[in-house]
Amino acid sequence: MSEDRSWEGNWVVRLYERVRERGYDSLTAFAEARPTASLVALAEELGPDDVAGVQVFRGLVAEAERSRRVTRLVRGQLVRELSEQLPNGWPAVLDDANRFDVAHALARWGTFTPETHQERVEQAKAALRASPPPPGWRPLGPDDELLLTLLPDKEV
Image 1 (tube, rainbow, N blue to C red):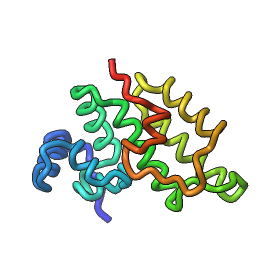
Image 2: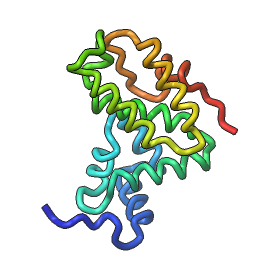
Image 3: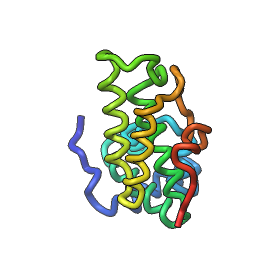
Image 4: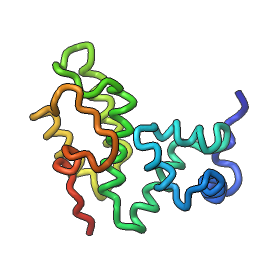
C-alpha cells in the first residue's frame, strides 16, 4: 500500500474534482447516493490513496451548513454508523455480545456531530437507550421515520 497523501496539495479541490468526475454536483449528492456507506468507504471510492474520511466529513458539514441542512447530515451520519456497527439492524436484546457494537456506533456518531448539534444528539442517544428501537431496525437513510422523530429538522 502506498503512503497516505490525503493532506498533500489542495485536498478540497481534489475532493470536488473526484465528485464531479463521478457525475455529482455536490459531495452531499455523492454521499446521499450511498447512504449506508461509511465515511472511509466514501473516501476510498473517491481516492484510495489521497482522500480521507475526515475530509469527506468536513466537506459534508460545510455543504450542510451552507444549505442549512445540518440536522439531516447528522441523521445521515447515524445511518452510516449503525450500518457499519449493526449490519443486521438493532439487536433484539442488548447483551454482552452486542452492547459494545451499539455503544461504539453511538459514540462514533457523537464524534462526527458538529458542535451545534451535540446537545440534540446526546438527547437522541439517551432516547435510544431508554426506549430502544424495534429489533432489526436498520435505517437506510436520513429520512427514516424514527430518525425524524429523534432529530426533527430545526435549522436555525
